[in-house]
Image (cartoon, rainbow, N blue to C red; front, side, top):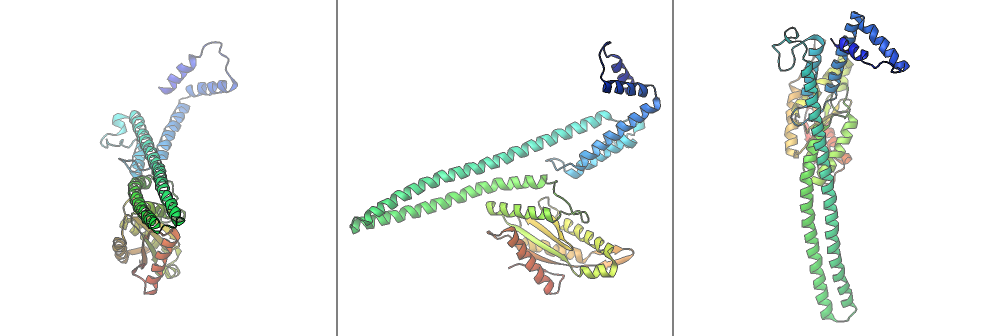
Length: 383
């Protein structure tokens, strides 16, 4: 047994080795444990509890990997923890009980080692890709600076010739210099636009890939405790991030602002607990309507929700909003035996190049206001 091996190890300490006071205390405790079977069992139970707690901690703070998502990792960790604690079948071998095969300690070690290896590879690859994007951005900036500098030097030389022609009093010389200067400036402007467009497209492609990885890896943002959606702070950060990426990459994005109709009346009639139940059901409807990993669903505050839908044009965002309207209309919230019917109003706003996070959000909020003014239970798209 493990305590017998520990006793043997203790007895192998060379004679004459001076033990510290702490070491002597530990040795004394070990001796007492070894001589007490009940203490040995208590020590084993503490070890089992510790392993299970470590497994659950790994599951709780897991994040999405390339081949497995955080939810699945959490479920696997919980199955291994229960296998260690109470002898349920180990994951992948549901037919075999602890009585038949004992606790699979080797399986636990293998699972943890493989999972940790997968996390390490994922983080290393993500950091590598992030560095590649940053270096690509620096490279494009430096190349653009050098190319623009060369064009500026050419334009400067042509302007110097034009100045010389102006003071020469020769109309023919002035005419040729002016025509040449106009041609150089027109050509430089055209070339610069084409070059910048190509560079933006290249950078945009890299940013799209990076954004996908960042979206899949996000697990650190705070959640709203009631609805389990992202909270206002997380929303503000995601709005700014989406605007920055859309400006650089030129990709589309759509924003939906959702408000529960007559929510104060629900609270006043059925109580605040019923109001909380309504918010949870609305949150579930939003999560089901926008299931992609890149879709960002958040509680804006009170009875308002906001959804950011990247790579989505305004028309597609309107269709998704209409789908959410129908889902909420068919919803019946049961609280304390009472049926509560609820509707929502929605404002939709597509991203416009030049938008800031504030202007984009304000436009969706104004569309939501128009929907409520028009009678609620409807959707309005911002102009």
